[in-house]
Image 1 (cartoon, rainbow, N blue to C red):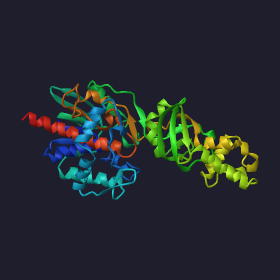
Image 2 (image 1 turned 60 degrees about the vertical axis):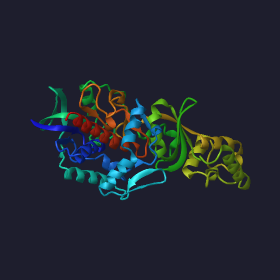
Image 3 (image 1 turned 45 degrees about the vertical axis):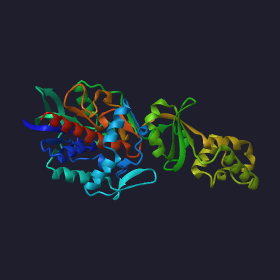
Image 4 (image 1 turned 90 degrees about the horizontal axis):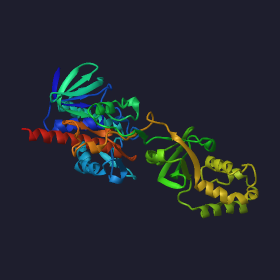
Length: 407
């Protein structure tokens, strides 16, 4: 049985950063176990393949967790500036866009993964890919980790296995079972940053249409959440940044309401429609919304309000108020989401209340739980990747501090 000082299960963002911090501090007795054939597969796909690694605004309001105090503490100790300083020290260059999202100048997520892999190899950290962990337990002060190839022992174990989202990257939720085997609880798990399913009868003909909209999630009349940005219509419902940002709240809502003209009020829209009917009373209703909203959207609004698109606009003036309200508040019944297969992030996990300031287990000494396994999830825009990097780095700091104390 091979022995190591620290074994890290998972070579995603959090696992790689935990290993790198240990390696940069001179530790070489570290083994990283990864079930995929290469490290950082999910990291290489982040930001639609462009590598949105963090955000210029890291306010805690962008995160959800059972203990926001601890989350804020971790992000303060290793935040955006510390992350970018380290990545730049490896030779990377980074730029931010108008929404605060930070990308590698190459706009290739895989290039970030390459930086980390090259440095890991240079530091002499052991990385075993294509090796799946089957179980882990603690015996006589040591952890015994069994894989489909071998058995290892270590003094410190880091669970960085990822959540349940995007299982095609190898994140099938097995990390939660490992955490449970050490006495931890796991909160209910939900897909987050995911496309939403809605009724489809009222979005016929909109597949592939992208609009800048304000979107609200409603539970009855109560507004659960609101977001402004791209909405992309699909054959099952809605996608896009505005939808992703609201998806963590979707299970509490029953209706999606879309405002196709977020910069105008109902009165302005109604006046524009009235102007058309007065100037061109013979115009077909199908052309009523031209130069106002996407033409396919306009036709959907007409159908929703029972207006035949071939009728002259002069004959539908009594419907202008209803049409304006519909375009400003287009309601779709929410039917769920595309689930973990399509989700970017898992909401829920091991409560961080069961972890100390360095993310070490309060139930099993020298066990650390980082990244998506913890019940921390953030908004769309680099927040979840920043948490993964930060939690891995802070956990490694805890390991190093504990080792120094024992000298």
